[in-house]
Amino acid sequence: MKYISRTIEEKLISMIDSYQVIMITGPRQVGKSTLLSYISRKLNKKINKVTLDDLVLKKQAQEDPELFLRTHEAPLIIDEFQRAPELLSYIKIIVDDENEKVTFGEKDKIQTLYFLTGSQIFETMEEISESLAGRVGILDLYGLSEREIEGKESQLFIPNISDIKTRKRTEYKSTLELYKKIYKGSYPELYTINKDIEKYYSGYFRTFIEKDLRKLINIKDENKFIKFVSSLAARTGQEFIATSVASEIGIDDKTASSWLSILKNTGIIYLLQPYMNNRVGKIIKREKIYFTDTGLACYLSGYIDHITLEKSAYSGAIFETYVVDEIIKSFANSGKDIKKHLCYYRDNNHKEIDLLINYNNVIYPIEIKKSANPSRDAIKNFDVVGNFETQKGNGIVLCMSKDIIAYDESNYMVPIEYI
Image (tube, rainbow, N blue to C red; front, side, top):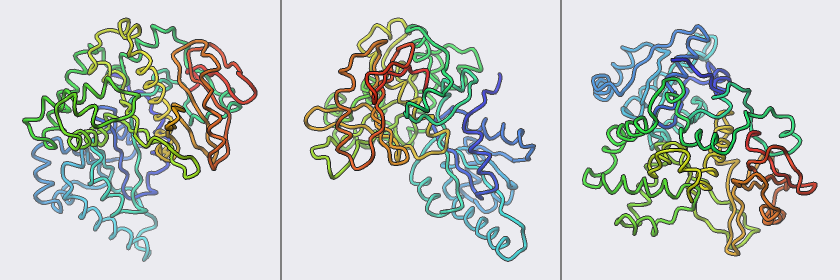
């Protein structure tokens, strides 16, 4: 089992001893604990570790959090921290005490005392941000990016065409090779250990149900929830319409929205926000659903091989999901606030742009097409960005073309290997 270097390592290392607490959130099995263990070895820094998946340790942390923190010496990794939110107030006391020592010259500088990881981004995580404002650094970790899998240098994906042309491409893939990758997904274990893909996702989803779900919904609703997740997987890349999904599953709209939040907060899905601007009227305000792992989406949608997947009606949506996921990872791995930079556009006049990237007050429109030669029709809605309050950047169509090709001086088709 070989460790695969993660792009986020550089950002994490820069945060150590700049914050007393560092929190890494993300879906199960994306490598949060492995990342911290690797950094500990790389920096030759002794960091103790406990996991609250251990029932005995969880009980100790919940019943006597002060004793738990005294028993386990800092610096300390606390895995699955959300299982014992009782620890938070005691961590705050310790952090405040350390701050006083630095303030009054008893210590030279602050150091990172606690590394918290969690596969659930619930109220506890929000409480951490509020209670430890300025003292906690937060990173989101997702599955492996294509560049990480190939061991290539990663950098933030900004669609400025001049910057794109200087980027090193990932390996060119035929359509079937790409869909084989999409079907496999991005969880590290699938690349470090030779595992059957279908069995892996079956076990992954079972673990999710047993460890994350059963505390959040009534057990009688479990079968309906599974149908709900599968229904959303079939809708990846689409707007979330609660009424449509709810009626299909036999639940009410409120339950559908609640369950959507569970999937969002456990990192199973990402909700892409619509572009909002007072100068542009009649904007659709629904969020778009993207599964954060294409392999899991394919498993839940019932696909058993990449050949069938590529020929299916689902192929376009899962291609778009793969591309959006890669861009999300680019921003997350650079420590950027994804919501601040990524959104999409759709209005009541049926004008839609798959993705907008807002960076340095410049908005770049992006369309995503499973095609080697998408027509000019792909850029027909890019002019709407001229009505926004920010500067309009060049537009790109991310596609299966082999080279960067200009539609005109402001719009280009760009191979997905440049992400």
